Image (tube, rainbow, N blue to C red; front, side, top):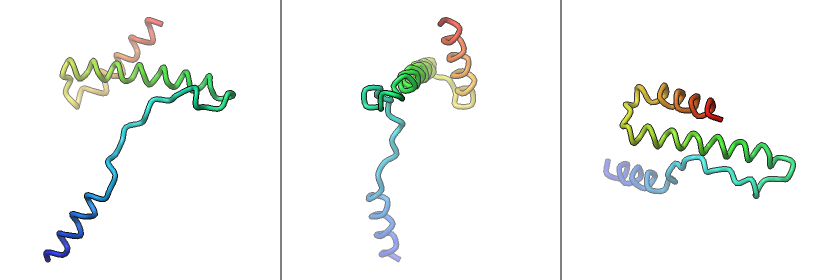
Length: 79
């Protein structure tokens, strides 16, 4: 029984941690896709800003999606 736990522990330690999606760098994208990359980066920054607002306001997980959608809609309306 001990070898099973030992192998399971090694398997858990050997796995890489999950990472969030990195910000798109328009300078590292082919020139024909640069405009789309710039738009994607702007969207990612808006999403991160709204997520930070949700964290600061301590929004409950069940209400987080609605809060983020409302935040993104108000940001889009401002532009």
